[in-house]
Image 1: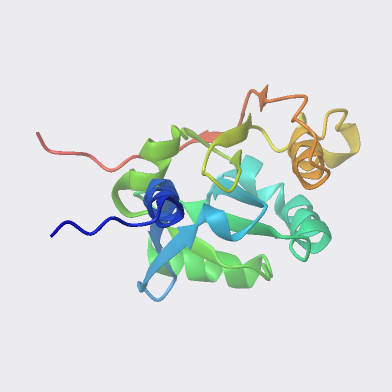
Image 2 (image 1 turned 60 degrees about the vertical axis):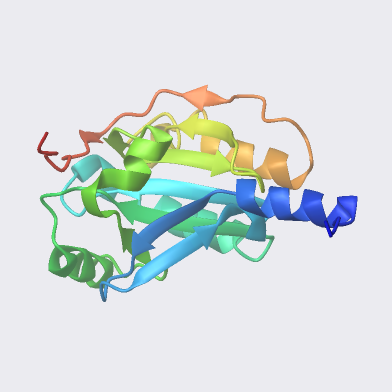
Length: 183
């Protein structure tokens, strides 16, 4: 006897299977899985412990988290640099007084999945994991010279259920030091 599932159950199952997740490690080397479907927007920002451009954004990262984290936006800060250890990341969080977690992307799997190549480089994902915005946080390392707050505006548009006007702004900073894959 063939049992038929109601159509709604099949659709829900298919939607759950299609919802992408990001698999990372926390600073204690414990696996973490981030689901984009859990928030109205998931903001992924690739950071570095050593990159002066990435480090110039600490206050702006904190401002974004402070403004949007309580509004159904989850922030995922990721270190994908193969030359930066967990101890480097832990010390960086402490020294920069970051109040949010920074996850480690071993072997660049998430960076490869999203196509990230720089720090800082940001992505805004919708509940389905589709990229709505990709690129720089804004247009200047010097906060006083910022004219385009592309990441902020993209998040605000998603929360206001508007389409993201500026879908991309060229990222600038330091290249992600990638894991060498042996063929």
